[in-house]
Image (cartoon, rainbow, N blue to C red; front, side, top):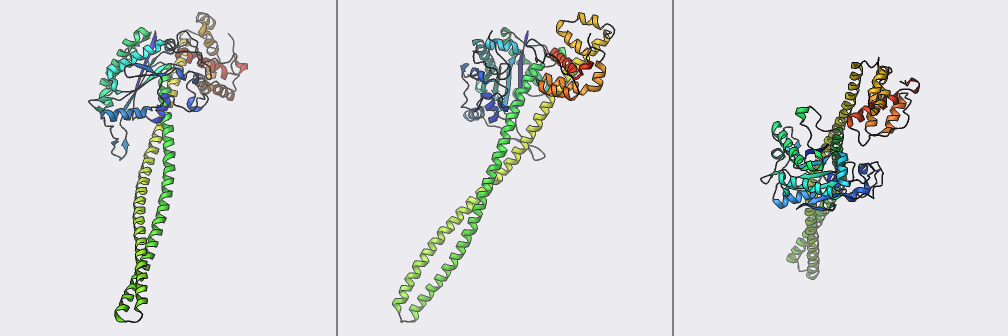
Length: 508
Protein backbone atom coordinates (compact mmCIF):
# COMPACT_ATOMS: atom_id res chain seq x y z
CA UNK A 1 0.00 0.00 0.00
CA UNK A 2 1.17 3.54 -0.70
CA UNK A 3 2.44 5.64 2.19
CA UNK A 4 1.27 9.05 3.33
CA UNK A 5 3.67 11.97 3.72
CA UNK A 6 3.52 14.60 6.44
CA UNK A 7 6.32 16.97 7.30
CA UNK A 8 6.25 19.84 9.82
CA UNK A 9 8.75 22.66 10.08
CA UNK A 10 8.71 25.98 11.90
CA UNK A 11 9.90 29.26 10.43
CA UNK A 12 10.44 32.85 11.50
CA UNK A 13 7.66 34.24 9.33
CA UNK A 14 7.00 33.78 5.64
CA UNK A 15 9.35 35.50 3.20
CA UNK A 16 8.15 37.05 -0.04
CA UNK A 17 10.37 34.56 -1.90
CA UNK A 18 8.65 31.61 -0.19
CA UNK A 19 5.26 33.13 -0.97
CA UNK A 20 6.25 33.54 -4.62
CA UNK A 21 7.24 29.87 -4.80
CA UNK A 22 4.04 28.62 -3.15
CA UNK A 23 1.78 30.84 -5.27
CA UNK A 24 3.88 30.37 -8.44
CA UNK A 25 3.79 34.14 -8.82
CA UNK A 26 6.70 34.17 -11.26
CA UNK A 27 6.96 36.58 -14.16
CA UNK A 28 8.34 33.90 -16.47
CA UNK A 29 7.70 30.17 -16.65
CA UNK A 30 10.83 28.93 -18.38
CA UNK A 31 11.43 25.39 -17.04
CA UNK A 32 15.13 25.67 -17.86
CA UNK A 33 15.60 28.76 -15.67
CA UNK A 34 17.17 28.13 -12.27
CA UNK A 35 14.16 29.09 -10.18
CA UNK A 36 11.55 27.46 -12.37
CA UNK A 37 13.13 24.12 -13.20
CA UNK A 38 11.38 22.14 -10.47
CA UNK A 39 7.83 22.46 -11.80
CA UNK A 40 5.96 21.94 -15.05
CA UNK A 41 4.73 25.28 -16.49
CA UNK A 42 2.14 23.44 -18.61
CA UNK A 43 0.44 22.22 -15.40
CA UNK A 44 0.64 25.40 -13.28
CA UNK A 45 -2.99 26.25 -14.07
CA UNK A 46 -4.06 23.00 -12.36
CA UNK A 47 -2.84 24.23 -8.96
CA UNK A 48 -5.51 25.47 -6.57
CA UNK A 49 -6.04 26.56 -3.00
CA UNK A 50 -8.64 25.88 -0.32
CA UNK A 51 -10.12 28.94 1.37
CA UNK A 52 -12.48 29.45 4.34
CA UNK A 53 -15.38 27.07 4.37
CA UNK A 54 -13.41 24.48 2.39
CA UNK A 55 -13.94 26.30 -0.92
CA UNK A 56 -11.76 25.27 -3.90
CA UNK A 57 -10.51 28.38 -5.69
CA UNK A 58 -7.75 29.29 -8.17
CA UNK A 59 -4.49 30.28 -6.49
CA UNK A 60 -4.71 33.96 -5.48
CA UNK A 61 -1.33 35.18 -6.72
CA UNK A 62 -2.20 38.80 -5.98
CA UNK A 63 -2.31 38.28 -2.20
CA UNK A 64 1.16 37.23 -0.96
CA UNK A 65 1.21 34.79 1.94
CA UNK A 66 3.53 36.99 4.02
CA UNK A 67 0.95 39.79 3.78
CA UNK A 68 -1.88 37.37 4.63
CA UNK A 69 0.01 36.39 7.78
CA UNK A 70 0.42 40.02 8.89
CA UNK A 71 -3.19 40.90 8.04
CA UNK A 72 -4.55 37.97 10.05
CA UNK A 73 -2.40 38.86 13.06
CA UNK A 74 -3.45 42.51 12.87
CA UNK A 75 -7.17 41.71 12.43
CA UNK A 76 -7.14 39.33 15.41
CA UNK A 77 -4.90 41.45 17.60
CA UNK A 78 -2.14 38.85 17.68
CA UNK A 79 1.24 40.36 18.50
CA UNK A 80 4.10 38.98 16.42
CA UNK A 81 6.84 38.02 18.94
CA UNK A 82 10.02 40.05 18.82
CA UNK A 83 13.42 38.33 18.41
CA UNK A 84 15.08 36.91 21.53
CA UNK A 85 18.20 38.77 22.66
CA UNK A 86 21.02 36.30 23.23
CA UNK A 87 23.84 36.62 25.76
CA UNK A 88 26.34 37.54 23.06
CA UNK A 89 24.17 40.49 22.02
CA UNK A 90 22.79 38.86 18.88
CA UNK A 91 19.11 38.36 18.22
CA UNK A 92 17.40 35.04 17.49
CA UNK A 93 14.20 35.11 15.44
CA UNK A 94 11.22 33.37 17.02
CA UNK A 95 9.24 30.70 15.21
CA UNK A 96 5.98 32.34 14.16
CA UNK A 97 4.79 30.17 11.27
CA UNK A 98 4.31 26.42 10.82
CA UNK A 99 4.76 24.90 7.37
CA UNK A 100 3.10 21.50 6.87
CA UNK A 101 3.58 19.41 3.72
CA UNK A 102 0.88 16.81 3.09
CA UNK A 103 1.02 14.18 0.38
CA UNK A 104 1.87 10.58 -0.29
CA UNK A 105 3.65 8.13 -2.52
CA UNK A 106 3.99 9.50 -6.02
CA UNK A 107 2.08 6.85 -7.95
CA UNK A 108 -0.99 7.05 -5.70
CA UNK A 109 -0.99 10.87 -5.54
CA UNK A 110 -0.78 11.07 -9.35
CA UNK A 111 -3.72 8.68 -9.57
CA UNK A 112 -5.78 10.79 -7.16
CA UNK A 113 -4.87 13.97 -9.06
CA UNK A 114 -5.10 12.81 -12.68
CA UNK A 115 -6.78 9.38 -12.72
CA UNK A 116 -5.66 7.24 -15.64
CA UNK A 117 -4.35 10.16 -17.72
CA UNK A 118 -0.75 9.91 -18.86
CA UNK A 119 1.46 12.57 -17.28
CA UNK A 120 4.96 12.96 -18.69
CA UNK A 121 7.19 13.80 -15.71
CA UNK A 122 10.31 14.47 -17.75
CA UNK A 123 11.68 18.00 -17.83
CA UNK A 124 10.27 20.17 -20.61
CA UNK A 125 7.32 17.84 -21.28
CA UNK A 126 4.04 19.22 -22.66
CA UNK A 127 1.14 18.18 -20.41
CA UNK A 128 -1.44 20.71 -21.55
CA UNK A 129 -3.85 17.86 -22.29
CA UNK A 130 -3.99 16.84 -18.61
CA UNK A 131 -7.03 17.84 -16.55
CA UNK A 132 -7.52 17.97 -12.79
CA UNK A 133 -9.71 15.25 -11.31
CA UNK A 134 -12.32 15.93 -8.62
CA UNK A 135 -10.74 13.32 -6.35
CA UNK A 136 -7.74 15.55 -5.64
CA UNK A 137 -10.09 18.39 -4.68
CA UNK A 138 -12.06 16.08 -2.37
CA UNK A 139 -8.81 14.75 -0.85
CA UNK A 140 -7.51 18.30 -0.32
CA UNK A 141 -10.80 19.46 1.26
CA UNK A 142 -10.63 16.56 3.72
CA UNK A 143 -7.02 17.46 4.58
CA UNK A 144 -8.10 21.11 5.01
CA UNK A 145 -11.01 20.17 7.28
CA UNK A 146 -8.66 18.07 9.42
CA UNK A 147 -6.20 20.98 9.78
CA UNK A 148 -9.15 23.23 10.75
CA UNK A 149 -10.28 20.71 13.36
CA UNK A 150 -6.79 20.30 14.83
CA UNK A 151 -5.48 23.88 14.67
CA UNK A 152 -8.42 26.16 13.93
CA UNK A 153 -9.52 27.46 10.54
CA UNK A 154 -8.76 31.02 11.66
CA UNK A 155 -5.08 30.03 11.95
CA UNK A 156 -4.73 28.75 8.39
CA UNK A 157 -2.88 31.41 6.42
CA UNK A 158 -2.71 29.50 3.13
CA UNK A 159 -3.57 26.02 1.88
CA UNK A 160 -2.00 25.59 -1.57
CA UNK A 161 -2.18 22.39 -3.62
CA UNK A 162 0.61 21.88 -6.17
CA UNK A 163 -0.20 19.63 -9.13
CA UNK A 164 2.61 20.91 -11.36
CA UNK A 165 5.39 18.84 -9.77
CA UNK A 166 6.32 15.15 -9.95
CA UNK A 167 4.42 14.40 -6.76
CA UNK A 168 1.16 16.29 -5.99
CA UNK A 169 1.16 17.70 -2.47
CA UNK A 170 -0.18 20.43 -0.16
CA UNK A 171 1.63 23.38 1.43
CA UNK A 172 -0.34 24.34 4.54
CA UNK A 173 0.85 27.53 6.26
CA UNK A 174 -0.38 27.87 9.86
CA UNK A 175 -0.10 30.35 12.71
CA UNK A 176 0.75 28.29 15.85
CA UNK A 177 -1.63 30.26 18.08
CA UNK A 178 -2.73 29.53 21.65
CA UNK A 179 -5.09 31.89 23.51
CA UNK A 180 -4.32 34.80 21.21
CA UNK A 181 -0.55 34.34 21.33
CA UNK A 182 1.90 32.76 18.90
CA UNK A 183 3.70 29.77 20.42
CA UNK A 184 5.13 27.08 18.17
CA UNK A 185 6.46 25.28 21.25
CA UNK A 186 3.00 24.90 22.84
CA UNK A 187 1.30 23.76 19.64
CA UNK A 188 3.96 21.53 18.07
CA UNK A 189 6.93 21.44 20.44
CA UNK A 190 7.62 20.93 24.13
CA UNK A 191 9.80 18.24 25.73
CA UNK A 192 11.07 15.65 23.26
CA UNK A 193 8.63 12.88 24.23
CA UNK A 194 5.63 15.24 24.18
CA UNK A 195 6.62 16.77 20.85
CA UNK A 196 7.08 13.29 19.40
CA UNK A 197 3.67 12.20 20.66
CA UNK A 198 2.07 15.28 19.07
CA UNK A 199 3.64 14.34 15.75
CA UNK A 200 2.53 10.71 16.06
CA UNK A 201 -1.01 11.81 16.92
CA UNK A 202 -1.05 14.06 13.85
CA UNK A 203 0.08 11.16 11.66
CA UNK A 204 -2.66 8.96 13.14
CA UNK A 205 -5.29 11.63 12.48
CA UNK A 206 -4.11 12.06 8.88
CA UNK A 207 -4.03 8.29 8.40
CA UNK A 208 -7.70 8.05 9.43
CA UNK A 209 -8.56 10.51 6.64
CA UNK A 210 -6.17 8.95 4.10
CA UNK A 211 -7.32 5.34 4.56
CA UNK A 212 -10.00 5.54 1.87
CA UNK A 213 -7.54 7.23 -0.51
CA UNK A 214 -5.16 4.28 -0.51
CA UNK A 215 -2.52 6.00 1.65
CA UNK A 216 -1.23 4.11 4.66
CA UNK A 217 0.01 5.50 7.97
CA UNK A 218 3.14 3.36 7.78
CA UNK A 219 5.01 1.57 10.54
CA UNK A 220 6.20 3.07 13.79
CA UNK A 221 9.90 3.84 13.40
CA UNK A 222 10.59 2.81 17.02
CA UNK A 223 9.12 -0.60 16.38
CA UNK A 224 10.62 -1.27 12.96
CA UNK A 225 13.85 0.71 13.10
CA UNK A 226 13.06 1.84 9.56
CA UNK A 227 13.87 5.26 8.16
CA UNK A 228 11.13 7.80 8.93
CA UNK A 229 10.88 8.78 5.27
CA UNK A 230 11.49 6.75 2.16
CA UNK A 231 14.20 8.24 -0.02
CA UNK A 232 11.56 9.55 -2.41
CA UNK A 233 9.62 11.17 0.44
CA UNK A 234 12.84 12.54 1.89
CA UNK A 235 13.71 13.99 -1.51
CA UNK A 236 10.27 15.64 -1.70
CA UNK A 237 10.66 17.17 1.73
CA UNK A 238 14.26 18.20 1.16
CA UNK A 239 13.52 19.65 -2.27
CA UNK A 240 10.73 21.80 -0.86
CA UNK A 241 12.75 22.77 2.22
CA UNK A 242 15.84 23.61 0.17
CA UNK A 243 13.77 25.50 -2.38
CA UNK A 244 12.10 27.58 0.33
CA UNK A 245 15.47 28.21 1.92
CA UNK A 246 16.95 29.06 -1.48
CA UNK A 247 14.08 31.48 -2.14
CA UNK A 248 14.55 33.06 1.28
CA UNK A 249 18.29 33.27 0.69
CA UNK A 250 17.65 34.90 -2.68
CA UNK A 251 15.23 37.29 -1.01
CA UNK A 252 17.82 38.16 1.63
CA UNK A 253 20.43 38.61 -1.08
CA UNK A 254 18.08 40.99 -2.88
CA UNK A 255 17.46 42.77 0.43
CA UNK A 256 21.21 43.16 0.98
CA UNK A 257 21.59 44.64 -2.51
CA UNK A 258 18.60 46.91 -1.92
CA UNK A 259 19.92 48.07 1.44
CA UNK A 260 23.35 48.74 -0.03
CA UNK A 261 21.73 50.81 -2.78
CA UNK A 262 19.60 52.67 -0.22
CA UNK A 263 22.70 53.39 1.86
CA UNK A 264 24.46 54.84 -1.20
CA UNK A 265 21.50 57.10 -1.90
CA UNK A 266 21.30 58.17 1.75
CA UNK A 267 25.03 58.85 1.85
CA UNK A 268 24.64 61.02 -1.25
CA UNK A 269 21.76 62.92 0.36
CA UNK A 270 23.74 63.32 3.59
CA UNK A 271 26.73 64.74 1.71
CA UNK A 272 24.47 67.10 -0.25
CA UNK A 273 22.77 68.39 2.88
CA UNK A 274 26.07 68.71 4.79
CA UNK A 275 27.32 70.93 1.97
CA UNK A 276 24.05 72.86 2.14
CA UNK A 277 24.39 73.36 5.90
CA UNK A 278 27.92 74.60 5.44
CA UNK A 279 26.86 76.98 2.68
CA UNK A 280 23.87 78.33 4.62
CA UNK A 281 26.01 78.80 7.73
CA UNK A 282 28.58 80.81 5.73
CA UNK A 283 25.79 82.80 4.04
CA UNK A 284 24.13 83.59 7.39
CA UNK A 285 27.44 84.66 8.96
CA UNK A 286 28.17 86.96 6.00
CA UNK A 287 24.67 88.38 6.11
CA UNK A 288 24.95 88.98 9.86
CA UNK A 289 28.17 90.99 9.19
CA UNK A 290 26.36 93.03 6.53
CA UNK A 291 23.41 93.58 8.88
CA UNK A 292 25.74 94.64 11.68
CA UNK A 293 27.41 97.21 9.39
CA UNK A 294 24.02 98.58 8.29
CA UNK A 295 22.87 98.93 11.88
CA UNK A 296 26.04 100.87 12.69
CA UNK A 297 25.38 103.21 9.75
CA UNK A 298 21.84 103.68 11.00
CA UNK A 299 23.11 104.65 14.46
CA UNK A 300 25.51 107.16 12.88
CA UNK A 301 22.68 108.69 10.84
CA UNK A 302 20.52 109.08 13.93
CA UNK A 303 23.44 110.72 15.75
CA UNK A 304 23.90 113.17 12.84
CA UNK A 305 20.25 114.23 13.12
CA UNK A 306 20.74 115.07 16.80
CA UNK A 307 24.03 116.98 16.51
CA UNK A 308 23.65 118.93 13.30
CA UNK A 309 21.03 120.81 11.36
CA UNK A 310 23.09 120.51 8.21
CA UNK A 311 21.46 118.60 5.36
CA UNK A 312 18.72 116.95 7.49
CA UNK A 313 16.75 115.91 4.44
CA UNK A 314 19.69 113.96 3.05
CA UNK A 315 20.22 112.22 6.41
CA UNK A 316 16.51 111.32 6.64
CA UNK A 317 16.62 109.83 3.14
CA UNK A 318 19.75 107.88 4.03
CA UNK A 319 18.09 106.65 7.24
CA UNK A 320 15.01 105.38 5.37
CA UNK A 321 17.21 103.58 2.86
CA UNK A 322 19.12 101.93 5.71
CA UNK A 323 15.86 100.85 7.40
CA UNK A 324 14.70 99.28 4.12
CA UNK A 325 18.01 97.50 3.66
CA UNK A 326 18.07 96.31 7.27
CA UNK A 327 14.50 94.95 7.00
CA UNK A 328 15.30 93.22 3.71
CA UNK A 329 18.48 91.68 5.08
CA UNK A 330 16.75 90.70 8.29
CA UNK A 331 13.98 88.97 6.31
CA UNK A 332 16.59 87.19 4.17
CA UNK A 333 18.48 86.18 7.32
CA UNK A 334 15.32 84.82 8.99
CA UNK A 335 14.49 82.75 5.91
CA UNK A 336 17.99 81.33 5.70
CA UNK A 337 18.01 80.56 9.43
CA UNK A 338 14.74 78.70 9.01
CA UNK A 339 16.14 76.87 5.97
CA UNK A 340 19.26 76.00 7.96
CA UNK A 341 17.18 74.60 10.84
CA UNK A 342 15.09 72.53 8.41
CA UNK A 343 18.22 71.26 6.65
CA UNK A 344 19.80 70.30 9.97
CA UNK A 345 16.62 68.43 10.96
CA UNK A 346 16.61 66.66 7.60
CA UNK A 347 20.30 65.86 7.99
CA UNK A 348 19.70 64.33 11.42
CA UNK A 349 16.82 62.29 10.01
CA UNK A 350 18.98 61.09 7.12
CA UNK A 351 21.78 60.12 9.49
CA UNK A 352 19.30 58.25 11.68
CA UNK A 353 17.90 56.43 8.64
CA UNK A 354 21.44 55.66 7.54
CA UNK A 355 22.29 54.18 10.94
CA UNK A 356 19.09 52.09 10.90
CA UNK A 357 19.72 50.88 7.35
CA UNK A 358 23.33 50.08 8.23
CA UNK A 359 22.19 48.01 11.23
CA UNK A 360 19.52 46.35 9.09
CA UNK A 361 22.16 45.55 6.48
CA UNK A 362 24.40 43.95 9.12
CA UNK A 363 21.52 41.85 10.46
CA UNK A 364 20.32 40.85 6.99
CA UNK A 365 23.84 40.01 5.89
CA UNK A 366 24.27 37.89 9.01
CA UNK A 367 20.94 36.12 8.36
CA UNK A 368 21.96 35.56 4.73
CA UNK A 369 25.21 33.96 5.87
CA UNK A 370 23.30 31.73 8.29
CA UNK A 371 20.88 30.68 5.54
CA UNK A 372 23.78 29.90 3.22
CA UNK A 373 25.39 27.68 5.89
CA UNK A 374 22.03 26.03 6.64
CA UNK A 375 21.40 25.37 2.95
CA UNK A 376 24.88 23.89 2.63
CA UNK A 377 24.26 21.66 5.66
CA UNK A 378 20.88 20.52 4.33
CA UNK A 379 22.38 19.68 0.96
CA UNK A 380 25.22 17.84 2.68
CA UNK A 381 22.64 15.97 4.76
CA UNK A 382 20.85 14.94 1.60
CA UNK A 383 24.08 13.73 -0.02
CA UNK A 384 24.95 11.81 3.15
CA UNK A 385 21.52 10.18 3.11
CA UNK A 386 22.01 9.00 -0.46
CA UNK A 387 25.55 7.85 0.38
CA UNK A 388 24.19 5.76 3.25
CA UNK A 389 21.59 4.22 0.96
CA UNK A 390 24.19 3.39 -1.68
CA UNK A 391 26.75 2.06 0.80
CA UNK A 392 24.08 0.02 2.55
CA UNK A 393 23.12 -1.67 -0.71
CA UNK A 394 26.76 -2.32 -1.60
CA UNK A 395 27.35 -3.86 1.83
CA UNK A 396 24.20 -5.98 1.65
CA UNK A 397 25.22 -7.35 -1.74
CA UNK A 398 28.76 -8.14 -0.68
CA UNK A 399 27.61 -9.90 2.49
CA UNK A 400 25.05 -11.84 0.51
CA UNK A 401 27.68 -12.84 -2.03
CA UNK A 402 30.19 -14.10 0.51
CA UNK A 403 27.60 -15.82 2.66
CA UNK A 404 26.36 -17.72 -0.39
CA UNK A 405 29.86 -18.71 -1.55
CA UNK A 406 29.32 -16.57 -4.63
CA UNK A 407 32.79 -16.87 -6.10
CA UNK A 408 32.39 -20.65 -6.37
CA UNK A 409 28.79 -20.97 -7.50
CA UNK A 410 28.29 -17.72 -9.43
CA UNK A 411 26.28 -19.03 -12.37
CA UNK A 412 24.00 -21.12 -10.20
CA UNK A 413 23.33 -18.14 -7.94
CA UNK A 414 22.58 -15.88 -10.92
CA UNK A 415 19.95 -18.30 -12.26
CA UNK A 416 18.06 -18.07 -8.97
CA UNK A 417 17.88 -14.25 -9.03
CA UNK A 418 14.80 -12.33 -10.30
CA UNK A 419 15.26 -10.96 -13.81
CA UNK A 420 15.43 -7.37 -12.58
CA UNK A 421 18.39 -8.25 -10.31
CA UNK A 422 20.47 -10.03 -12.96
CA UNK A 423 21.87 -6.82 -14.51
CA UNK A 424 23.04 -5.87 -11.02
CA UNK A 425 24.55 -9.30 -10.60
CA UNK A 426 26.32 -9.18 -13.97
CA UNK A 427 27.83 -5.75 -13.37
CA UNK A 428 28.85 -6.22 -9.77
CA UNK A 429 29.42 -9.83 -8.92
CA UNK A 430 32.44 -10.94 -10.80
CA UNK A 431 36.06 -11.34 -9.71
CA UNK A 432 36.95 -7.83 -10.85
CA UNK A 433 34.76 -6.22 -8.18
CA UNK A 434 37.32 -6.13 -5.39
CA UNK A 435 40.06 -4.60 -7.62
CA UNK A 436 37.45 -2.15 -8.95
CA UNK A 437 36.54 -0.97 -5.46
CA UNK A 438 40.18 -0.84 -4.42
CA UNK A 439 41.31 1.21 -7.42
CA UNK A 440 38.21 3.30 -8.13
CA UNK A 441 35.99 3.13 -5.04
CA UNK A 442 35.60 6.92 -4.81
CA UNK A 443 34.82 7.33 -8.52
CA UNK A 444 32.31 4.46 -8.40
CA UNK A 445 30.46 6.02 -5.48
CA UNK A 446 30.48 9.48 -7.07
CA UNK A 447 29.22 8.04 -10.36
CA UNK A 448 26.47 6.14 -8.54
CA UNK A 449 25.53 9.32 -6.69
CA UNK A 450 25.30 11.29 -9.94
CA UNK A 451 23.10 8.59 -11.49
CA UNK A 452 20.88 8.55 -8.41
CA UNK A 453 20.42 12.32 -8.64
CA UNK A 454 19.56 12.09 -12.34
CA UNK A 455 22.80 13.73 -13.50
CA UNK A 456 23.78 11.31 -16.26
CA UNK A 457 26.17 13.78 -17.91
CA UNK A 458 28.09 14.24 -14.68
CA UNK A 459 28.23 10.46 -14.18
CA UNK A 460 29.67 9.97 -17.69
CA UNK A 461 32.25 12.70 -17.05
CA UNK A 462 33.38 11.06 -13.77
CA UNK A 463 33.56 7.62 -15.39
CA UNK A 464 35.48 8.92 -18.40
CA UNK A 465 38.00 10.75 -16.22
CA UNK A 466 38.64 7.43 -14.42
CA UNK A 467 39.26 5.64 -17.73
CA UNK A 468 35.87 3.93 -17.79
CA UNK A 469 34.39 2.45 -20.91
CA UNK A 470 30.84 3.64 -20.30
CA UNK A 471 27.74 1.50 -20.37
CA UNK A 472 25.86 0.23 -23.38
CA UNK A 473 22.19 1.03 -23.93
CA UNK A 474 22.19 4.36 -22.12
CA UNK A 475 20.79 5.22 -18.70
CA UNK A 476 17.01 5.46 -18.30
CA UNK A 477 16.87 6.64 -14.69
CA UNK A 478 14.43 5.48 -12.05
CA UNK A 479 11.54 3.25 -13.11
CA UNK A 480 8.03 4.26 -12.01
CA UNK A 481 7.50 1.06 -10.01
CA UNK A 482 11.05 0.81 -8.62
CA UNK A 483 11.64 1.32 -4.90
CA UNK A 484 14.54 3.45 -3.74
CA UNK A 485 16.72 0.62 -2.40
CA UNK A 486 16.53 -1.32 -5.66
CA UNK A 487 17.18 1.91 -7.56
CA UNK A 488 20.25 2.62 -5.41
CA UNK A 489 21.46 -0.91 -6.06
CA UNK A 490 21.04 -0.49 -9.81
CA UNK A 491 22.83 2.88 -9.73
CA UNK A 492 25.80 1.25 -8.02
CA UNK A 493 25.81 -1.67 -10.47
CA UNK A 494 25.71 0.68 -13.44
CA UNK A 495 28.46 2.84 -11.90
CA UNK A 496 30.70 -0.23 -11.59
CA UNK A 497 30.09 -1.01 -15.27
CA UNK A 498 30.74 2.59 -16.33
CA UNK A 499 34.01 2.88 -14.41
CA UNK A 500 35.39 -0.47 -15.60
CA UNK A 501 37.37 -0.22 -18.89
CA UNK A 502 35.73 -2.20 -21.71
CA UNK A 503 38.75 -4.52 -21.96
CA UNK A 504 38.22 -5.56 -18.34
CA UNK A 505 34.49 -6.21 -18.52
CA UNK A 506 33.91 -9.85 -17.66
CA UNK A 507 31.14 -12.06 -18.90
CA UNK A 508 29.44 -14.89 -17.06
